[in-house]
Amino acid sequence: MDTIASLFSFITTPVSWVIVQFHAVYGKIFGPDTGWAWGLSIVSLVILIRICLIPLFVKQIKSTRAMQTLQPEMKKIQERYKNDKQRQSEEMMKLYKETGTNPLSSCLPILAQSPFFFALYHVLNGIATGKTIGVINDSLLASARKAHIFGAPLAAKFKDGSATVQALGATVTDVRVVTAIMIVMMSGSQFYTQRQLMTKNVDTTVKTPFMQQQKMLMYVFPVMFAVFGINFPVGVLVYWLTTNVWTMGQQMYVIRNNPTPGSKAQAAYLERLTKHVTHHGKSRSRGEKAIVKAIVAKGRDRNEFERKFINALTKAGLVAQADGTVVKGEAATLVETEDGTPATPGAAKRQQPKRQTKSQRQSATAKAAGESEPKTSLTKSDEPEDAKPSAAKPAGGGKPGTGTRSKAQSGQRKGPQRPKSPSKK
Image (cartoon, rainbow, N blue to C red; front, side):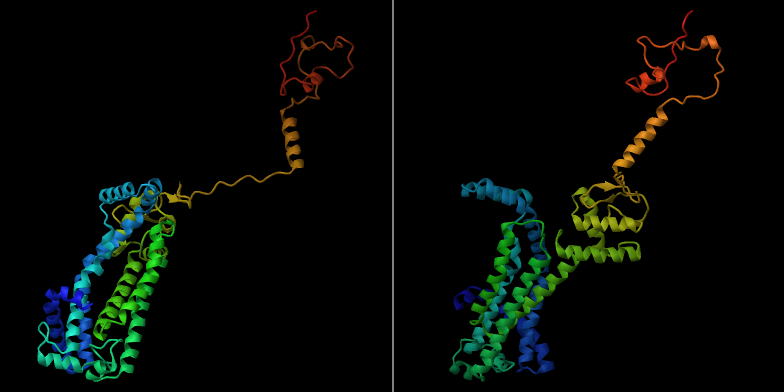
């Protein structure tokens, strides 16, 4: 660790200068030789560094979401070239180049603060060994060696022996209890941050090897922090615990206000946004407009939560515009069903006819047949007698009453029949 820290000695002077400036401020409040003055100086250093790294964090979020979007394509490439690793790597690099993504972008914040981390370790190691380093002179060195955080010296480690700890004015028990508690808190905060990312801000509709890797890292990182933490000075533990807490809070803010599409966090966010927009009748903040604009632009590619959001706005008489604004309107848009197909808002759903019983179907058939038969008049016809058809018996000696009507019932088409031409006498 000392060799690695010496590689970043070029940044030791700036880091020590920042700590000294914060110590000058907190020393006037808590006293120059107290652990509060030196501990808060390290915390302030972390906050300053993390504020400077916010652009990298935004880039990390965009890169992570881009990688999640590419997972189906990456899985196809892996299956297609599973027997040719070289071709698989070439196709992966081609995919990254075409989409403008970089797998290492998700590690940028950690890589960017590594020099500051090792520089701080180098400074604290110099305080532990009694060496001036950077802008820390003899008087500041003596003040830092007197500083204790809950009874543990700033430069003490978990593995330090009794002689080293006594030289710093403390006991081995105090040092190990404080460092053990800080290591557990550091590992726990790392585990919670990764678990929060996996359970709330991951698209659950996509099952890829990337998700399995993230689940594995959720358990690997805390173990790594616990193993390496016993070699860190108390001041470095303060630094790393502070940066973990910052990361956890920053991620909670992002998950709440800009969740990953298709995740549980997006469902919760759109539910809150629906209540807010329907209450005020419009989208108010710039962030809300950006979310609404992105949902409108997707069209038929919206997921289940986004379709529910659009439908809820339509039912409330509101219309989401392409620029992200929400205006009042009744029939300007289409309501989407659960499967994504559009339907006219307010239109009643087509109801299936009720199934009839066999007796009902027979009675309806008989009724229809009765209406189609020609009605026979019981009154005397007004036609002249010579215009009436002959009433002679049909050839073959058929029975009475089996004339034209009987023939119609035995095979001729139903309905009114054309009258026969009158018989010529």
